[in-house]
Image (cartoon, rainbow, N blue to C red):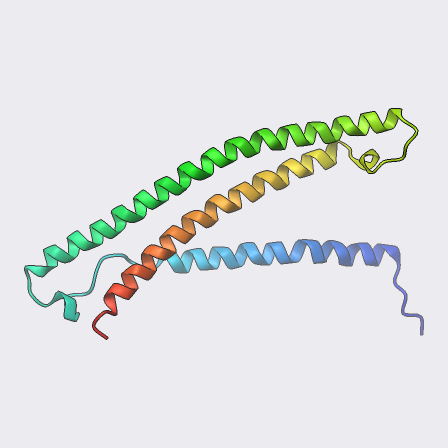
Length: 162
């Protein structure tokens, strides 16, 4: 039997292999985000060993507030760093895409066949979209990481007596 596939079938398969994993990744990330947000940072319950005396409830509230405040400082510093990095990266993205597009025009004038001749406006726009989505992923990942570290510290604090 002939097992060869048509070019159209191969194109469809390759397109699906390029599209399905990112879509699955987005849904997995949303699932994880919902789960992570379900964790309440409020200190141990009243029946917990750390919360026995009534006067220590105020101390626990202070510790929880302190944990949230420290996480906020870390978030603020990381966001400031990323914004500064993205400022420099934006300049690079614009210059690199303009240079690639200009190189295409230059290669069209010379007789040397160069790789840049296949760069066109959609290629440059795809490069920019990829840069912006990568930057957004970095920002979202940093926010999730800071919150996950806060949750880890909180849960570890609750398990001190074990």
